[in-house]
Length: 182
Image 1 (tube, rainbow, N blue to C red):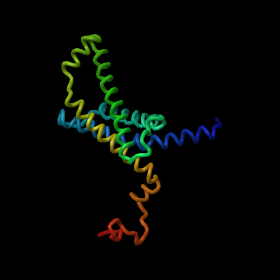
Image 2 (spheres, rainbow, N blue to C red):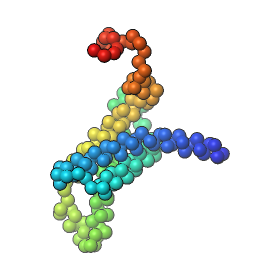
Image 3 (spheres, rainbow, N blue to C red):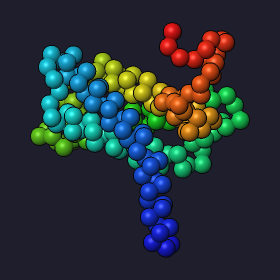
Image 4 (cartoon, one colour):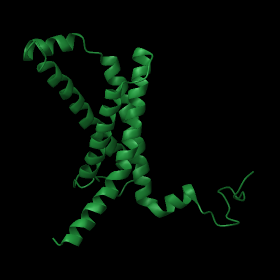
């Protein structure tokens, strides 16, 4: 691979990874703030925001890798909702498994040892908090995948034009109303 080809490859991969990374960094920091406000009535700690930012970066990379898997785009011939739901299910299943594994490893490496640590952690596990965060992840992954499927069908340039303009003078909105301020 030539140097220019390698540079083009890395630039392309970075551009592909940037939107989900930014999306998940923002969303995970909002979740961290929400959890802190609900649990403690104050702002999230710097460590919580750093962890949320790191998790957002990992999700950005995970999306990059997952998009390359052959079984990931399983329903291209069906309406967009099928692929959006399928990808959401995969993302949520993986995050569920990783979050449980993280909790188990944290308990196992504690001061009690593996079996006693896991038993102690299971006894005091906050399932409601765990599932509340998992519900947030479900919603966020669905929004991300549904919008991603839409962009894939309509095209990035058209979506950017629809959201940020410029709108052609005299263009009509759906329903026959003229575009512009009411």
